[in-house]
Length: 333
Ligand code: VTB
Ligand code: MG
Ligand code: MG
View 1 (tube, helix red, strand yellow):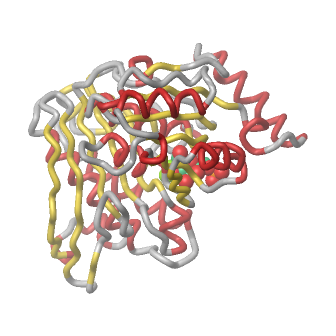
View 2 (cartoon, helix red, strand yellow):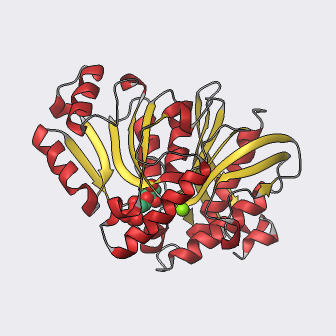
């Protein structure tokens, strides 16, 4: 991938974040998401690429979302693109921390095509590469990561989501002496933070979205961290009700059609097949990874993390935007 594409992709997440930001604290997560999607699509279509969305917001019949299989760009290099226009629509709607807009791009075939279901995820940075195995108990992974990092367990920090499905895991980790950060939402930003060098977070463990899992895998590849994932049917993630069992049945059928195994461990290389990826993440609300957008209605500022896997360069881009100078098409989203 041409390295100039990196700056182009940073414009895409900046635009998505700015569009989503307009819906900050307005209680409507779908409006925020819709605006971010439209902005993303518009800017992607101005880039000289032959792009295909391989991880998106939904299937073709669920327009106007950026759908899986959608072609973007004006023509040029063939690239596969994984997006989450807002990871943290709920945080955006409620004015909570850690909402981001994110995009990962790689050459054709770089990313696993994950169905829209849950994924169990275990992620570590470079220092604990090779020390995680999702088919072993969480406690064993904790011990192995601590050993790899040369830390006592009580100095280990694990981030997870504060969801009922994680209550037992959180307690088990705390009982071992692990410091657990249970954030309400937003495991994409947390994954990036886990993989950053000199981070306070040693490991991420959670059951979250599978599409976001593939984005996180791209991040782990780019920063030479490690990740394993496992697709989890709805009833196992959200409770064994008749409705969830029905949804789970559909998910499993889809996976079978796509040739992806449910309930088996997916390695990092299976989810992200190359480290020649570009990742752009722009903060929407304030987080541990990125600053929030600020805006007075005329000027806005954004902070973007731009990572090129090939060189492993991590850039932080602070931009000031004159909103009246933006393309008309995205000004009024
Ligand atoms: C959320 C969200 C994550 O997965 O946890 C979601 O915060 C799924 O969980 O960032 P619920 O359906 O229980 O809310 C993510 O969107 C991505 O993994
Ligand atoms: Mg989203
Ligand atoms: Mg998301």
